[in-house]
Length: 119
Image 1 (cartoon, helix red, strand yellow):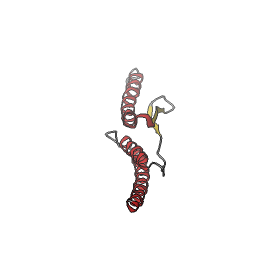
Image 2: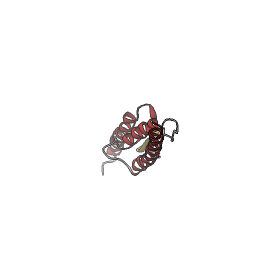
Image 3: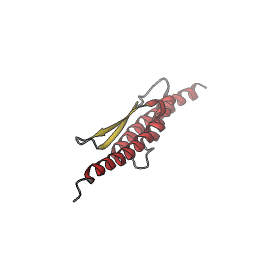
Image 4: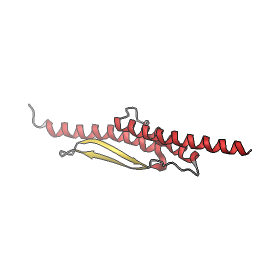
């Protein structure tokens, strides 16, 4: 075995892992726009990138403006599914945003029915 190639292999692994992880997280960030935080790349004890994340502002149900909640939920869903290889966590985030969106749609429909009643 050529021990001189171990540092070269490690550097190659660091570079390839970083590029793959960064591209995944960058897709989230680009799709989320202003709702996204910074890209964080996580490394193991040897300094090799092993994961990453981008924080995202999950919308809350706004009874006064359900349309805004729906728009923000759509942004979160699109961001979660933006990478070509969504992770299980990405699917969980999208499901949470879909649930919030569903609540906002229900609220919006109830408000519309009330307005239609008085029209």
